[in-house]
Image (cartoon, rainbow over all chains, first blue to last red):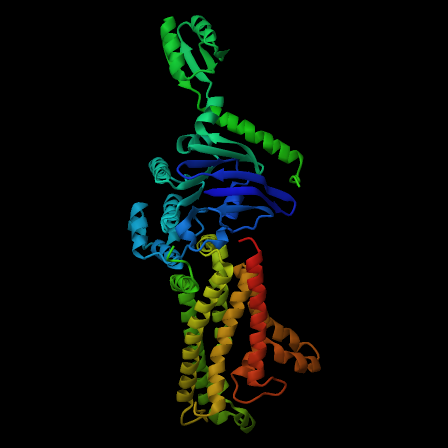
Length: 307
Length: 261
């Protein structure tokens, strides 16, 4: 288990992480959400002992990263896919990493095979596309078969097939009882990938909870285009839904899932032409949450932590 | 876990890294070619002009330093190898991957130092003995030669290799402090090359009192079989260069431990 304990990181005037406090549990995929510059990467770097916190701590099963006896066996991380010496081949990059943690060389071929880059293993990393680099980074993270996995924006640069592959992969890792911590600035992506979500903005925790919890609060809007909007609106209002007219032929319904809206329309004898759950609203809520924190931060540069 | 990380494992990892990039392989090749090529060329030039050489020049002729002259150029090649061994980690960002795998920074820097020291001292000594022998072979029959059987000659050649090795470590230590390849190489070249040039314009008494402490002049003392005027003896020069290296390395290690990656 990963524990972020009242973590604060200050760089001169700016405060990148502000009293961040949460836990990442094993067995589920935990999404780490925030707009660019909200402190996700800084947090990831502190978890890995790359940056020293100004205050607070990060522990992995009770231990600090720098005190891990065999780091790659305990934590696997993909921070920046391009952070590899461009002149080295993928295999040599992995061989060196494996050697440093006494991982047997045959494991290098296993992870190359698993991530689908075995055919380019002897090519220099400098010539890799971002997608290939991401796969190499994932291969490196898996080398030690660790219980805790961290991925910073892993879907960047992946093609749709790669994105699907990585989602399945995260789920399977979590199903094996591992701790999977994935950052992203895309709420929609996390909604599909993560079970638990932690939202931060301006280095502060904004909200956390299961995806179901979060979506329940926002997934009220369903766009409906139907033959008889007046009848449908009445029926929906009777079911305590909130209805908003969005155009002459459409309404926006909140407080009900799309299945329920369809059922109500059927019962009311209204023919539905279109029924669209508004995924964008998820994004909107995220934007709203984080925009507040951005505004707050922008008006108070050098915001001081609670001491 | 039975396979806890240790220094040996990290040395192995750094050795793989050292061998698997072109900069080290190229650096070592350039080092070989420069030292042997220039040493041979200069020795040949001396031989072919020996009959026209004045008596005064003949008296002070030193077959050891002359055969090792290529080192004056090669010292930049080894310095760059040392610098790039650490700065390339920062320029590519791979230092983050490296530190995630080896969070114990003292262990990481120690492993890098061991790989650098061992590989460069072996290569340097081979190169220095080879260029010495090449020079003597060129001189043979025309110009006076030196023999490794003479203690001071053997010492000069051995310390020439040590001088290059310490310069490599100096470059590496500068890299730990400065982190940027270009800036680091500039500083390295300035100290070795520009500093002595600046001193040419300063009063002679200053030159005589301070110049002997310049790394390049320490090197000259180390690889010369005879002590020169206003220069330190070979072993004193070695100790001073060791102190420089230790101080810069110590500063680099301290910063490496304290700073964010």
